[in-house]
Length: 528
Image 1 (tube, rainbow, N blue to C red):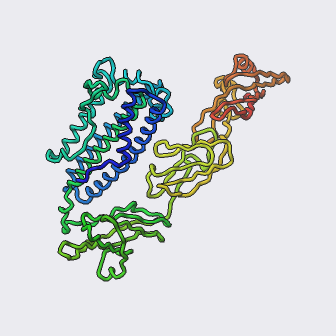
Image 2: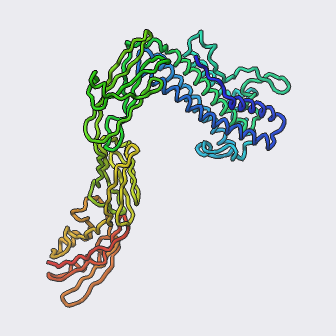
C-alpha cells in the first residue's frame, strides 16, 4: 500500500501553525497575526492542489472499474463511499468556517465564503468565536466545537470500517481529537477547549483549513489502500478485452476523431504494442501490413484521426501483449464513427425578424448536440434559455447576429433584421371605419386596439386617450377629448341625436404597449 507522505511544504505549514498557536498565549502582535494569514493562504493553496491529486486517484479507479467490474467493484464501491464521507465532512467544516467569519464580521454567509482572511477586520478578536464554538459551557460541550468533534469522530469510525482490520494500523487518519492536550500550566484540556477557547478568528480559520487538509490526507491514504487492494496480477491475459472509449462517435468535417484504447493489465517491463488500420472493418494479416503503430503509456493509447471527408468511418487494430512465458498474444478491436458537416439551425419561432421590446422565441439546434452543449450569444440585446427554446430581446438596432458555440466549437452565425412592433389597428364595433348604424355604435362605445392579422405575437395595447369630433348637417362641430377608450356620457348623448349621413372622427388615439406609447390611425365613421 502506497501511503501518502507529507511534502516538506506541508510539514513546514504544520510546524508554523503549532508555533503560532503557542505565541497566541503570549501576545497577538501584528507580526503573529500576519503570520497566521500567510500560513492560512499556504494551507488553502495546498488544499486545492491536494484535491486535484485525489481526483487523479479516483480517475485511475474509474478506468479499472470499466475494465473489470466484478473484480474491482467491491473496492470501487468503498472508494465512492470514502469520497462521499470526505466531501460531507469537508463541506461541513467549510460551513463552520463561514459561520464563524459571518458572526465575527456581521456579514452574510455568502459574503463570508468569498472573504479573504487578511481583509477581515475582526481576525484578531476571539469573543464572538469563543461563544460560537464553546457556548455557555465550561468544557465546550454547548458550542459548535462539540458538534465538529462528533462529526470528526463519526468520520474516522466509518472510513476505518472500510479497511480490513489487519490493515487499520497502516492507515494514517490523523484528525487527533483525543489528545492529551494541556494548557501552559499543565492542566489537562479537551480538544474543544484546546483549540477554540479564547482563540482569535485568524487561528480558527487556519485551524479549520488544517482540518480540511487532514481529511484530504485520510481520504488519499484510504483510497490508495483500496486501489492497491485490487490485485493487478489477477487479470489473466486470457481475460484481457480491448476497450475503445471515444470522445464522441459524431465528428464534424474539419475536426478530429479522438478515442482512448485501454488495456486491463500489462507487464510493466514490456508495454503492449498497439497497431491501427484506418478504414478497416476488422483486422486481417493482409491489413496488418498497412497498420501504423501507436505509442501509449501505462496501458492507455490515445489515437487521433483527422476527419477529412464525410460519412461513416471505420478503423480496426490489434493489441499485442507479451505473456510471462514470452509468447505474444494478440487482442483485436474495431470501431466506427460518423463524420458530418457542422449543421446549425437558428430560426425565430414566430417570424423571420426580431421585434424590439418583446420576447422573441428562437429555436436553435445543432446536429448531434444536446441543448446543454449549445451556447449562443447575440451581438445586441440578450438571449436566454427557457425550456427547449431560447428567448431573445433586442434594442432598437437595425440587425442582430446570433453566434452559436456547441461543445466548444464555433458552429456559425445567423443574422436577423430588427423591427419595431407594428402599431395596433384601432377598431370600434369590429370595424376600422366606414358606415355604421347608430345603435351598434352606442352599443360598442369603446375603441379596441387589435394587432395586424399577420403579426403572430400576442401583445396587449391599451387606449389611453382620444379625441371625438362630430359635424352636424348644419355645420356645427362637436369636439371633445376623452381619457381611456370609452365614450363619455356627453359623447353618447351627441351620438343619440345624430342623423343619417352625419360623420364622426375618432382621432389623436394614443395607446400604450410593451415598448411605450403610440399614436394610432384615425377612425372615420358615417352614421347610417
